[in-house]
Image (tube, rainbow, N blue to C red):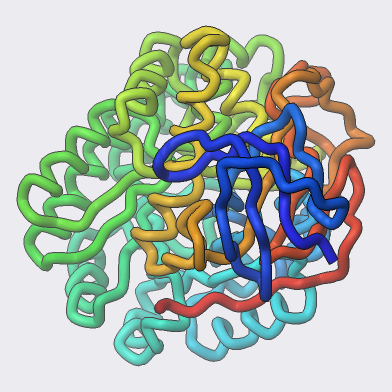
Length: 448
C-alpha cells in the first residue's frame, strides 16, 4: 500500500506546490512543502501531480453497443488518461431514459468500472414523467439532445418539450446537460448542401455551423433564465456560446460550459489528413475560431474540459461525410493533447499555467458544479485521486498503447507531451507506466 507521493510538483487549487502528500483511508491526509524520505511513498521526481480528472461526457456504450466499447475497457482507458471519475452518457441501447434503466446501469457499472462513476439520465418525449420521479441524488443530471446525429437515440427538438424538461429540472434541483444544436437549422442546412452535391468534409462543418450551436445555446440559456434551471452546455465550440453562458450568469443562473480535447486539438484544416475519423458533432471549427476558443480557456472563461469519449467501429467511420457516424474516442489522450496544444499556442514557459488551468477545468470546477466536492482537487480531506504527468518525454501515440476496445485513435502517430504515467484512485495505485496494476475499484457517486 502506497502511503503517499513524494518529490512531486503538486497542482493544487492555490497553485503549484513542491513537496509531498500523505494518503490514508482513501483520502488526502496531509500536504507538505518538503520531501518525505520514505520508501513507502511513490517517488514523483521530475513530474507534476494533478488531481484525478473527471470525464463529464463519457460514452462507454453498454448496454447494447458493446462491440464499440465496454465499461471495463473504457474505464481502463480513462485511468490511463488520468480520469478517475466518469459521468456516463445515455447513448445506449436502450437509452437510459427511465428509473429502471438507470438502476440497471448503476449495477452494470458497479460490476465493471475501474474508476468512480455517476450516471446521467437521458430524456425522451415519452419518458418526461420519469424526470418527476427520479431521485436527484442518484444522477448527475438530465441529458438533453436538442438536435441529433446518426447515433443519437432520442432528441428533444421542440422548444415546448424542452421547456417542460427545464421546468421539472428546476423544481427538483437537477442540472440539465444539453447538446446544444438547433435541429431546424441542422436539417435545413444539411438538406441544402446535399442538394448541392457537397460531400466534402467542410460541408459538414458549414452545415452544423457556428449559427447552429449559438442559436441553441441562447435558447437553452433563455429557458434556464425563465425557469431558474441549473444548466451545463456540453462540448461548446464557439465564443458565442460562452457569450450566452455569461448572459445567463449575469441574470443569476447557475450555468457553465465545457470544451472537448478534440475541439481544441483539431481544426477544419485537419480534415484533409484525417477525414471522417474526426467527424464530430458539433463539428470542428476553422483555425480562427479554434484560436478564439483557446483564448477563452486561457482567460478562465471556460468551465470544463473533457474528452467526450465517443468510440465507434472503424467501418462505421467510413463513407462520405453524410453517412459516416459522428464521434471519436479520446479519454486516454485528452490530457496530453490539451497540454500539447496549450504549449503550441502559448509557449513552453506557460506550461505550469496550462497545468493549473487544466486541473481547474477538468477536476475542480466540474466537481463543484455537479455536487461532488470530495473530487474537487488536491486538498486535505478530499479523495486521494491523483495523476502523475510526465511533461519531459514525448508520447508517440501508438495503437498498442490504447486500452479502448477498438484500439484506434485520431491521435495515433502524433507526438504529445504531458502523458499520465500513474493514476491513483482513492489512494490505490491502479495505473502505472502503461499497465493497469490494480483491480476494479469503481464506486457509484451520489450527490453530497
